[in-house]
Length: 563
Image (cartoon, rainbow, N blue to C red; front, top):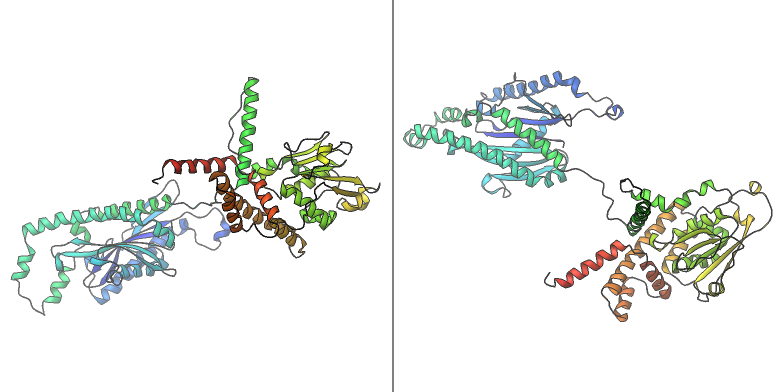
């Protein structure tokens, strides 16, 4: 944490003064390029010490010009080397002296000292002139300050005014550390006050100053001399603590270290998406299945770390990752597929995909089918995808909604006559070399025939498809932009799916209420029937984790109506 702690004192002769300051000096970065031209802390130790002493001597000499410097404005003499503590874990050095060793921090601490003992505490923010306050700005830094009094039998009002300030540039960090700083600074302050109180009581027992002052003769000529004499006592004298500054150095150094390590910055990616949850569930099921097989065979399995989201997604698309290894032409994107098939045929095919119908491709080129499935699967949530990339026999729709077949595999009659399936037959257009036409010239190599028994119009909806086609037809949008647009559309409609699932399946609302929810979700109007079919199909892709969590939360609420 880039911050420093300082003990400040209000002198009756010289005003606010900085008594003691502890700052953290971080080790140099391992990257030399990022600190080019910056002085290395290890090389400037001696210069830094001289600089700190120079600041102290300059402050002392300037004060001497205005009036004799009293002991109450000093902690360590200019010749004192100060205190140094080194954190072996991080290499951070904590340095303490009367003033900061860095010249640019001198004015910052000075301003914080003045404000903590004058204008800030005189306002309504700090009633009683004792307690914590927060102030600052982006230019001079932000300050957490705690003002307090120390008993002094010779002071006016029998007490002297001090403050402990922490100065940092990070406002949010300092505000979040408020409870921590307040708790530990109060321990330090209470220790100083209790020690000084004992000295005060002993001095009052020997010579009560209240009676002495009431019996003394007041004279305007003598008052300045009396005031100067009363202001000369140091904090060491008030507490009778010979190792006071070493003790404060330890306290301030620990405070900087603890405050810097208690809060750490982390990159939060938010809650896992439904696709991530489904991938994790599938990975778990595969591991459990493998464990069962290994247990049956008497084998052992080694524990492995949980896979990351990128690894899970890579495993899900493992067959697709091998596309580059397959020879022949391949579809590269949804826009490429649309250009090859044509706008009308593309919309018909995508409509079947979004409705959850079985999509069957027959071709002698497995790589072409696999590339088409890779592009089409991006339209659906992961939980809605069940794929058989290439098979020598037909597989029923409950097993897969993406099915690749060799050209000689017949389609059963109940499938070809069903409105819930679409068939894409791929045949060679001409016998020519791929190297002559190029692998991307798919339309010159193949002929695509799309057939389906569906009689329902596909040009009305769903809304997602309408928006996607607008993006695909806009040539000003790159393929990456269209991909991000599709991702946003999927997330939008998955959120609608969650609302509908909670409302209809969990709460068990009636048809009339469900219709009102659909209207609120923007699923009614033109293409309403297609929107509803999409929502119901995508509902099957919700993760088991989400469904279980939702059902548990609802049942818990039913058992505890008082909550």
